[in-house]
Amino acid sequence: FGKGTVQNVAPLDRRGELGQLKLTIAQFFRVNGEGTQHRGVVPDILFPTAQDSHEQGERGLDNALPWASVDAAPHQTWHKDQTRLEQARRLHAQRARADQRFKLLMEELNVLRDGQKQHSVTLQQDKRRREWEARQTNKDEREALYKKAFGNGTDDEDTDQADILLEEAARVLVDLIDLRAVLVDASHNGMASAVGDNDTRR
Image (cartoon, rainbow, N blue to C red; front, side, top):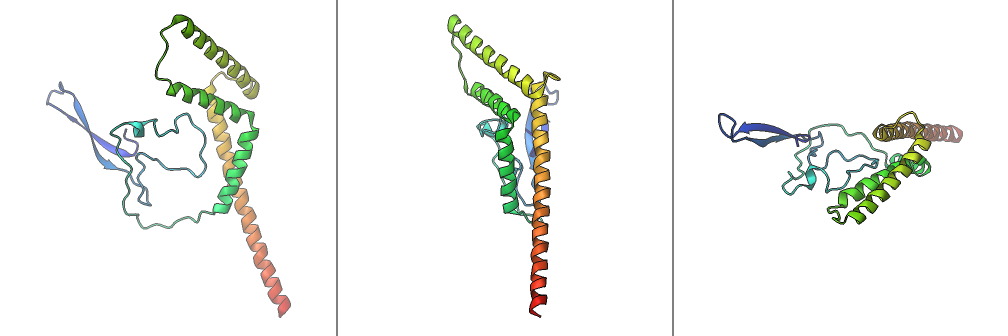
C-alpha cells in the first residue's frame, strides 16, 4: 500500500475514462539490507495490537508483494545486550500482568479479534437480538471497568489505549537506561577490583 514501496499511477487512456493502473516501481530497504515491505520493522518488545495477525493488512492479500532483502550497506552495528533486553522484557511483562489497564486493553483486543473472525451472521431475528444484547451487555461492563481504571475524564477508549502504550514505552526506555547503568557500574567495579588485586599482588 506504499508504506514499504513506491507506487506510480499510470492512466489506461489519455482521458482517464478507463481508469488507472498502480505500478510498484521501487522498494525501501533498511541499512542492513532488510526490506520493510510485508514484515515491517520487527520490534524487540512487542506491544499487543488488534492487527498483529498475518491475515490482517496488505500481507493478508493473495497477491501481496513478498518480503525481500538486498546487500547491506556499510554501517556500524550497535551492540545489542541480550541479557539487558531479556531483563527489560521481564519487567514489561510484570507490569502488564499487574496493570488493570493493560488487562482491559487485552480484553478489548480479544473482542476485536473475535469479531474479525466472524464471517457470517444469523438471519433469525430472535437469535440475532440475543447476540446483540449479549454484546451490548459485555460492552457496558467493559465501559464501566474502563471508567474505573482510567477515571471519568474521557470517553475516548482509543486515546486511553494509546496513553497506556505510550506510558509503557517510556517505562521500557527507562528500564533499558537503568539496566545499562547497572551493567556499566558492574563493569567499572570489576575493573577496579582487578586493578586492586594487581596492586595487592605487587
